[in-house]
Figure 1 (tube, rainbow, N blue to C red):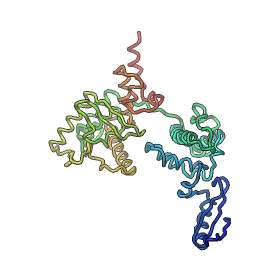
Figure 2: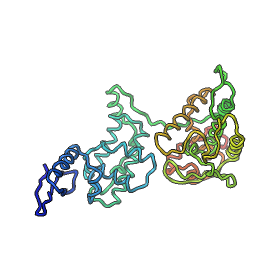
Figure 3: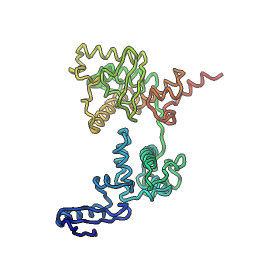
Figure 4: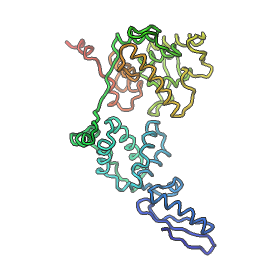
Length: 386
């Protein structure tokens, strides 16, 4: 319970103490006792539940809990949308957890919980750990005495891979352990031809009628751009016409997944596909259903909203549409994101660019991640041997 007293001035002072949540007693002043009682009652209910109101976080001189660190980090640092989403999901997971208690055992226990309780895929575990590790790096650099070192950086390699004990614990719940799968699916030359035939409006041999493709020219161009540029789907369908520089054969991306800007060079194939698409749109092609470039957007599916739900909705619809196209072409296990994998692999196969140079094109901030995309075909490597 809070203690209270009336000051000589007639105002009321309330003192609130909560070990582990408040670094020191909190003093609040109110004009009347009734006003103070009402406010403090609500505040204590929240503190008892381990919740610290945002206005109190701003008053505190140091970061105390994990949630403090996450909220402060998200407020003061410009983050990519992917990290924002991950950190928002973590807020409240450790209600009242003091940063002073965040050590290696805590980090190891969290990873074990994601495997044995949540049964997450190793890649998902790495995403969560990576986002919080970057947050804790910032907390450590901020100089708070609550967290001197970042224990997440001490986790061993392959920490996200399920051990035999992890797998046994998961199976005991009648669940299946998740394996670390790195996709290396690439479309073959025949599959590419089959996909282009479907995009051109041909009927698949195993179908009774042609696929219905609204904005077909845009679908054709998006496919060509994806397999030639290594851009992500969202990076492409949110493009503005002015971001494409034909003279310099580049696309300037000012909003990417990891928050950095980059220029993407265009192959002659991608440039020709762009020019063909622009000509069709400006010529009022009937299959574009009245879409034009007056609004500045290059593609017709997105309305310019940065709302995450809107963007996610567009991505889901396009992924589903291309999934049906790939299925009709006889390669139903192919995903649109595999085109980025294919384009990146081609950069390794067809150029002498270094890892760093290719990373600048693809936007990979970690070359270790980039190497997962560079699965060169064994047959292509074999012909280079003596």
